Length: 79
Image (cartoon, rainbow, N blue to C red; front, side, top):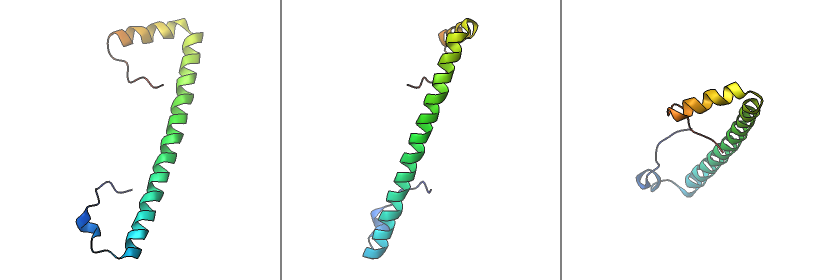
């Protein structure tokens, strides 16, 4: 996947067939990105669920995370 913008100058001299091909290529890239995003979100949910279960079973871990959170060292929360 390339990460640069496609400008009008890059597309204005292309044939209709070339533009249609580029359109399909970009649409497929978007579908892959959405699929990857969905899988990643599902994995995050699985990990978060397991963390929550472990925290519920282990009071020591909960206390340690709470003290870190209060000091501002905790990473972003998901969900």
